[in-house]
Image (cartoon, rainbow, N blue to C red; front, top):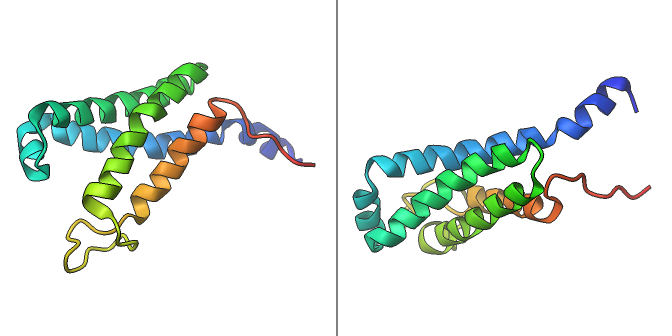
Length: 135
């Protein structure tokens, strides 16, 4: 393994963390501005919409904070994210796969949400550790 690879490998998780956190923070902050509008659009009670908003913000912040050393915070963050992603897939984006909007799917399909779900599941499983390598 080269010196650069040896240096970068243990830090590569930040690429996934940054991507996952940015999506959750973007959507959470967008909902804070108008939780009632989100609740109405989705047909949810205000309390459920507020809980989704909190989970998005807490998950986004937590996945970043957890990267500085706490596997517990990393895992807890993903536990907040998983129901949000499953809800987005079931309530909005499924069963269409393609991310692009189409007739009957103005918000696009579930492709993007499934990728985020898999990334969050990865962090739930490995926490802050590196996955075991088969050699």
